[in-house]
Every structure is written in C-alpha cells, then in structure tokens.
Image 1 (cartoon, rainbow, N blue to C red):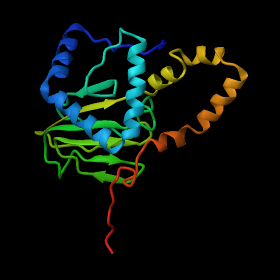
Image 2: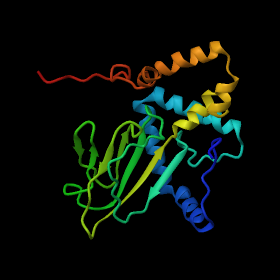
Image 3: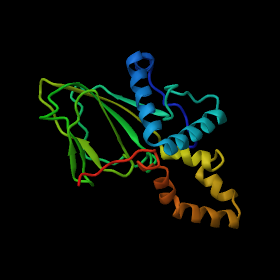
Length: 218
C-alpha cells in the first residue's frame, strides 16, 4: 500500500536503459527547454512546483531527482514504435498543473499523430519534435493513429498530486494528518479545499501579467 513518496523501482536491465536515456544530452535538452517554457509562461505555477519538489527532496535524502533542470518529479518514455494513447484523464496528476508531452519519431503529422482534447472539442496537429503542455489531470486527451510504416514515440514529464498533498500535510499520510489535527485545523482545511480550485487557477498568468499585449484585429 502506498504510504509515502518513493522512487519507482525497475529491474536491472530496464534501470540501465532508463539511466542512459536520462543522461543523454538530447533528453536533458528537451527537459531543459520545457522548463524554460514553463518558467516563462506560467512563473507562479513553476515556483509552486519548484517549492514543493525542493521541500519533498529535502525531507527524504533517498528520493532521486530525475532531471536536475526540471521541477517535475516524474518522467516517462514511451518507446512505441507506434505510440497511440486512448482517450483518458490522468487522475493521479495535480489537477491544475501541466503535463509536458514531447512527440518524437517519423510520421506524417498532417495525416496522423494529432493531439485530441476531447472536452475542448479540439484536434491539434502534433508534428515530431513538438511540445505540448496540458492539464492532463482534468483534460481528457488522446492522439490519433499513424501509418503502419511510421514511428511515433513520446517523452512526458508530470507531477503526482499526492506529492503535493504529502508536503502540505507535513510529510505524512492523509490518515495521519486527519487523525492529528484539531477541530479548528479541520475547519480551516475544509475551507482551503473549497477554495483550492481558485488557488490553482490563480497560479496561471495572463498575457498582461507577463508584460505582454495582444492587438486584436479590428
């Protein structure tokens, strides 16, 4: 049973391959680029993730940071060779955070490999080498198929919501936190949870807040 944040354990052969991928300059650059975009366009959300990850790592020296240039604790490599995701929502992810998805491989991006955001009723061309950032914890998404002789891989980075809850609750399980709090603390927590969606939304930035302006066509 899950009790506290921990490193994902792989067998020896998989661990070797994954470590080689993590140390590869190509993936380090992809991670760094995503971090730069994250920090530029959603600085408050970036700082929120950075603060929680730093607190988490400081609380347990056994935890391993996968990419030094990322504030997201989890990375996933999908080797395909024809990666297709069915419609789904990543309920375990922090709802108001962004999941960063790189599409890789060789395929005709006009004919296939499109990113579908079902709730928004949007289909987006997603060429190889492109990066998408979506709130995968609340947004149903998938991608379309590609040709039989084509290849498509993906590299994603994200953050489980349980990690944030662990930090916010004083590095203890939900059960321990509930059992130890006073009535006043419980009342405060209920109010905090009710307002959490607004807090999460406030972490996103408008163009004006970023010091940018857009001139709409007349």
